[in-house]
View 1: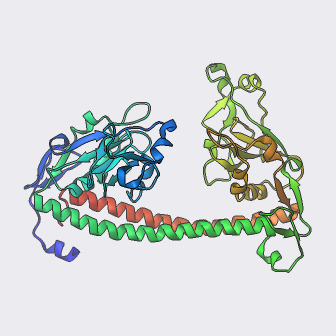
View 2 (view 1 turned 90 degrees about the vertical axis):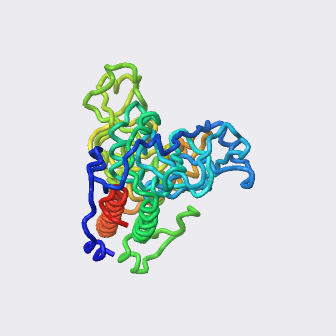
View 3 (view 1 turned 180 degrees about the horizontal axis):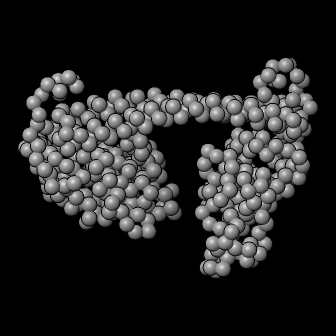
Length: 444
């Protein structure tokens, strides 16, 4: 195919007059989206209404699509999220089958995009683009192009971050002859499917590697390093059903016998004297990263802010545990800091290796979540957390386990990084061919 393209005579091009589109073939047109597309946003469903909209039978209702139901990488729509609207309900706008849904507001604005395979109702942060004037799949690919996305993002404004329909309806679109639109759509369907299949293979392997890594960590923190485990050393029943047996010489201790545990809090936000000081103030959102350590957050406190609500500065090496939304995120304090009420702080009361307990707590997320309670969101109490039982090997073994896990994690992570780079390469190639086809730089 590439050789055939190289032997074709050069196409005659003309300036489009649109910087982000560039030159287009001479038989292509440029016009505003509003002349070829009907664009409209959807309807929101309040949290308290979600139970009601989860009870409709499939045959008499449409799937309700939220932004989260669109996969950012593949563009696939999850039609089975659970929310549905009645077909006879005229309050909800409908995105017809074979229309394009684009996120136009929020963190995914200009990024999440999908092509509908059935009629759907949809959230107000999504915009439906429907056309009967041009090829529907060509429109989808044009709106998916990196050039269109960059143009869209340049107009994002407001606290939430979005672009009004009235603005992007005036964006320009490059329109080839009808038969060319069809050929472009078919070519991109084929090529993008091939690329998506390659990406899916790499993603599957990454998921398997992450699962393997988790099993390696779980085995090591509950049985010891493999070399020692293979030495047929005696085991004992831990007394914890979900944990099973542990090495006979290990102890089982409550968290409160290993750490001093306390919760953080938040000074009054309206008092400017409490904020922008030298003391790092951490929330669970600040340590949702692969890094084991955390040293700074999005906000800092003054000493006056600390004293106003009795906050305690944690020493370096303390374990920080997220007690809600979600339960179980873990980090180690790299330096002195304090936390908000979403965190439980664990200051060692005995000599230990903090990285061992980072690994240990990180694999027990499911068990911690079972202790959570609450209606609005689940939260684990300080009391329940403090009574949670953990294996406690001698410190020398803790250090041995940490050394082994750091080496194994680095080895597995390096393989994952290679695969992630492959995915990035595939994604960039996909972006480039979509741009080239939808602006006439490449022939179908």
